[in-house]
Image 1 (cartoon, helix red, strand yellow):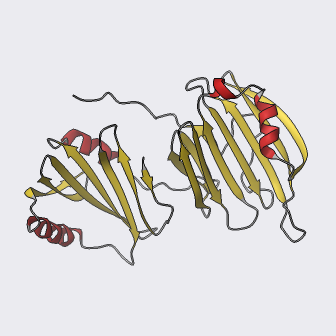
Image 2 (cartoon, one colour):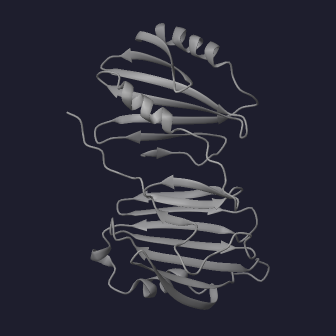
Image 3 (cartoon, rainbow, N blue to C red):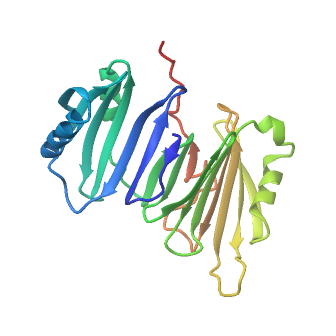
Length: 274
C-alpha cells in the first residue's frame, strides 16, 4: 500500500507490486445506495468516448462491475455500498497484459464490511499489524518508513489514544532488553509505572502500566498500558501504547498477548509472475 487517505468520508488507497500500481480502493459517504446498473452503463459510455476498447459489464461475487482495455492494460472496476455506514466503495484492479479473472474473483470474495466485536472494538489491518480500537476512534496519523511503521488512533474523549508501531532490522539497533527500551518510549508522563512480563506461545511480552499525567493542570488524566515483543516469525519489534480516559469497558488482560495489537497472521509474499 503506497497511497492512503485518513478521511473516513472520502478517500482512497493505492496498492502496487514491484513494477506498477495494481489496485485502488476509493470510498465516499453518500446519502443512499446508487443505481449501480445505470452507473456502470454511464461509465461504459464515458470510457468508450475516451478511447477504451473491449468494454464489458460484469457481475462477480455479486458485485457489479465494468472492464475495458487501454493500451497494454486491462482495468476492472467494481462497486459496493454499505447501508450501515452509507459509504460507496469502488474497487479498481489493473491487469498488465490480460485480465486476471481468478485474481479478480479471489479479491472480490475477500471483501466484507468489518463489524465491531462484542467488546465494541473494530479490527484494522495494515503494514503487517492487526489492530483493534474502539468503534468511535478515528485514524489520526500514519507514518510509513523503511523499517518503521507507526499508526495512531484518537478516541472521542481525551486522553484516549492508541499508538501501534512495528520496527524492522531489530538486531542492528536494539542493544538493550525490550523492557528497558520501553521505559524510554513511555517517558515521564506516565506515573506509578508497573512493569510485568508474560510468555505466550514461547514469546515474551513485556508490559508497562501506569497513570497518564499530561502536561497542563487542566488536561485530563488517564490510564496507560503498553506492550512490546519481538515476534519470532518475522523478527520484528511490535509496540502498542494505549491511553484511556477511564477504565475501559473491555478487559485489558495481564496474562496473555495484547488485545489491541497482534502480528498480522495472514500477510504473505506471493510469487512474481513472469
